[in-house]
Image 1 (cartoon, rainbow, N blue to C red):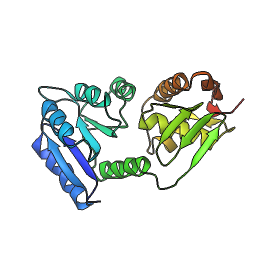
Image 2 (image 1 turned 90 degrees about the vertical axis):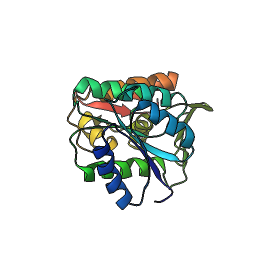
Image 3 (image 1 turned 180 degrees about the vertical axis):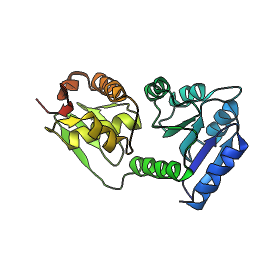
Image 4 (image 1 turned 120 degrees about the horizontal axis):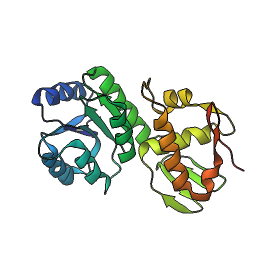
Length: 225
């Protein structure tokens, strides 16, 4: 994995070293930044080779939210937010801005590494597959979605959620099942995060957003009508 680069952004040097040591053991290349301004500088200089960012929320000069907003203007690189605040509203806010994972401190470094590996696996799929779902075409290799020939922009989480729904077309999926399969770990927050993502996906799909049906008291179902 020496060609896979992770940018660690945290103002605590001990935290950066802890994460760095675990990731180096797994063969990752590491870049570091100690505050928000430094993070944007390092990202700009290395964005072509950065595969994932671990981004702390509370930092001097520029906080993590500000860094996230600026990076999302030009890049869809996967981002895991690290925060000492585990409030549900913070998590919902982060997902709205395009966060791919959200981990509250303190956390197990081994769990963090597992989530890094899971995200990188999802963003670099090996299968070459192009499938059409009633005008919604999903390219699994390029991780792109087009609607009636027009490519639409989606975050990693939005893409994974849509992909899971279409892979299980015509099946009513509970929110718990969606969380366990799409978020890839036990999520203890409010299931409203799914509703928020579904709303955004429907909007991006336009008229084809109606293919995602709300199943009252259960969850959602994808069905081409």
